[in-house]
Length: 347
Image (tube, rainbow, N blue to C red; front, side, top):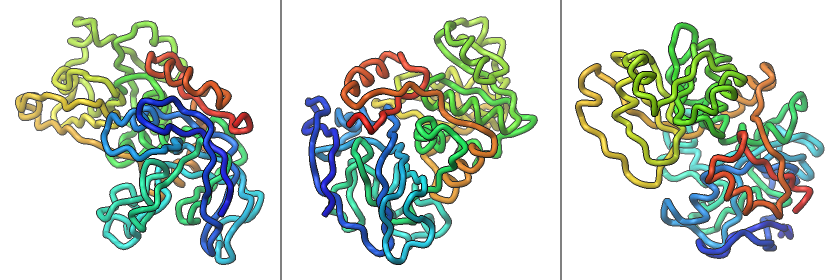
């Protein structure tokens, strides 16, 4: 077994604190890499606080993980010691269902293994995430990371990046489309970057007028303050797609009214409480309310390669491990531009 240092939550009411545990030894198809940087996702806090239910404690969060390979199993073909590597939200899946066979491991019908707050495919061994100094993952769930980009800023691509890249690719968003990005946070700023890179006209929808300058810096073509009735009225029936990154309660009916006929409103944010929606927000205009998760392993690697080719990374603020609770507090207040990343050398 491999002695591992981490920060963990012992209960839903406790702050993260140092914790030591054992990771499995490197098997024939496993890759061990020492973690250099780990992104901080809002879902880390949701799961620590058990806001989605079913949290497993002790919990070591973190699923935006990048580092350098220190050991590989005898049968590993894709990686060697010294390579840069990453792992996102998944560390395994059944490999046998139709979704897994088509590279959609995120929708594994037999239950994928989350990188943390989950269980391995034996359905009993807990998984522990990237707020730790090292990790062991089957090579099929390890991603190749380019050395062309700032490694710390690459980390959030493994969740915030792929969570927005995947639906934009699935709905074939591109040149000639009008895309609205609802919310300009960790997810939203990546949706803007990808939407622009894919050739769409991108508009940021936000309740905060103060974010307009940032939106334009990120490449957005337009900005709408949704608390201003005149501004929202001006874009009624305007958009082909809305990608909704908001994780707090909001009025879906309002935003559906901004879609064209056959427009799609795509949820990637996950508010803790169920939304209410009138059927007539959808029926006139044949509109779609859809959802999307992260991508599968092939699509995540495609996204990382696209980012290396087009020089796309997350906008980050690097923090020390000891400051994680302060980062959580600021994240809840929206006080981050746009993703915290932990320098794991400070663990």
